[in-house]
Image (tube, rainbow, N blue to C red; front, side, top):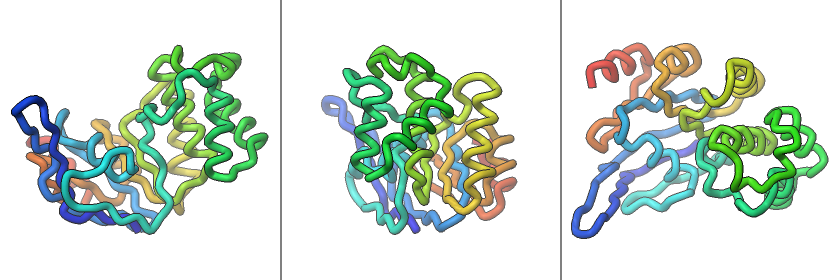
Length: 215
């Protein structure tokens, strides 16, 4: 289980403070597929970064009782001067994963070919997202944090991502931030709507989608 308790997040710019999250409380249970809905700037990516441990909240806390991926779509964890292969090797050491197995999976899943021998800093955002997807899937986390990038690449790659997350891993939890209402309705069993820094949880995904459309 992953639980957020009274989660606040503020950003300061000069003398101005922006209150992005204002006391967010919800729980991700094993096998949950939660769609995270909200207009641009509502705080979806911020919330996912906080749950993934990329940032620390201004107030409140995140309690993790499941292993949790880094936010897919966030590539700040890559060492840009290292190649795709080198980043994979580094991740394999951190998580005690066999590098040969990880390398094989990354090659097949990313379809990046010889680009894996190149420094990640020259990758496009789509290439970075492919690598982030592959490395997360290679570790087999109990909960995956997905920030919109499931729509990266051509239809073939999109279908591959959906197969890996929604068909091959039915026992894993997902938090999916997306503007694709069709994807959320098709794959999620619960939904959260973010508005004005507050999060409302809906057990009925269709109800959440209806609320989102009125924002």
